[in-house]
Structures are given as C-alpha cells and as structure tokens.
Image (cartoon, rainbow, N blue to C red; front, side, top):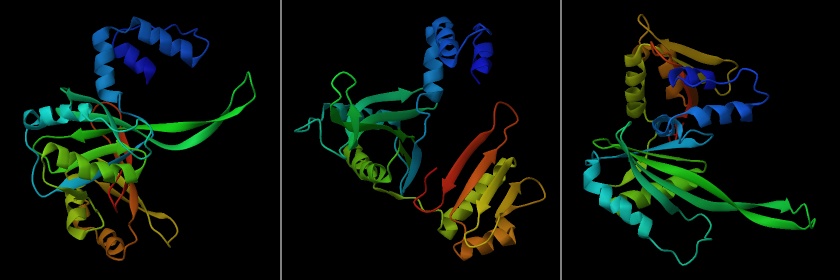
Length: 256
C-alpha cells in the first residue's frame, strides 16, 4: 500500500531499505505538505477502533449552523484533567474532503504497570484513549469512532445537547425495518458480499448482492433474521476502481 501511495504522489522509495521504519521515513521526507494533508484527511482516523452509529428523528442542519457551538466545546474547563471516563475535547475541524465536521476527543480509562529501567520501580500509568465524532450535515446519523461503547453512548447524548440537536438513539439493525433499509443499500451497490455467521449452526450464510439475487427477497436471509440468528456480518464491497472496502458490522447497537 505504501508503494502504491508513493506511485500516486510521485515519491521515490529506495528498494534497498533495511526495515519498515526506513521505508516510511523516506516516504514522509519526500512527500509534499499538500500530500501529507490529503493523506491525513483520508486516513488520519484509521485504526483498530469501532464506529458506533446513532440515529435521530430529524436531519442535522448545515455545518455552519453548529460550528460555533462545536468550537465552544474546546473552552469547557473541568475540575481535573484526570477524571476517568470523561471526554476531553481536543480539536474541532471541518473536513473539506468528506464534507464533515470532526470533533476529536480523548479520555482516561484503566491503567498499565510499567517498570522504570533505571530504578526497577514499577509505576502505574493511566491509559489514554482517543476518538472522533463525525458530524454529517443533512443526515439523520451520527458516527462516533472510539474503542469503548460506553464512551460512544455518553457522547451520543452530550454532543446533541451541546450543539442544540434532536436526540440521537442507538441504531439497531436487528429491527426488521432498519435491516431492510440496510439491505436496500447493500443491494443498490451490486458489488457487495455479506458473510453472516449463524449462531448454533455450523458454517455461515454468504450472499452476494449482484444481478440475479435480490437480498430483499432472499428467503434464507429473512428466516435467519426473523429467528435472531443474524447478529453480525462481514461486508466486502468491490468498487470498479481502487481497493476493496471491508468492514465487520454488528446488527445490535449498530457498530462496525
């Protein structure tokens, strides 16, 4: 993937580099400032975190309507910077590439014991976790990317209150109507494959959303959904260009 980016941005990477660190450093040294900004915009939030999806009854207003309120989050002062399970807001930015407003935050949860190499003394260090709230204008959905669902749910209540929005609720794809809307979207792509593990039954159910097979009328899919055996699935989307898109989705308290 790195060599692919090097080709796109016309950056030369020495093929005799000894390790990954050298390859990455060489790429970053030659990459232009604009190239770095573009890559950060697209992949800066990538990582091993979950995306929790919440839904509202009303569509969100334009970004300009809530931007000043979002910026005010940075001015919130708490009694301590060391509260556990408390969101501290770090940055508010408009992502022009994706036309979204992003509110970045961090929080403390748990600790880890580390040994000082010089003294041999063990010390407890608080663990810090990061996340981002993705606000899309004219949308009923709010996305919160972070590791722990408890923090995502806490922010799903606070962010609408701060920004003056209608409340957001957990998006449950086990609900038949919501699941059908998800299926309609997958079917419209005509290039997606869903692999669905079935609890209590060996193997899995694999459905390809291509011409000739309509997920909306797939009997087996609806039977498994009706009896609560479809809890999660792996989706692969194969666009005509660029790389495939893969994500795992959990239907209850929807997150990927």
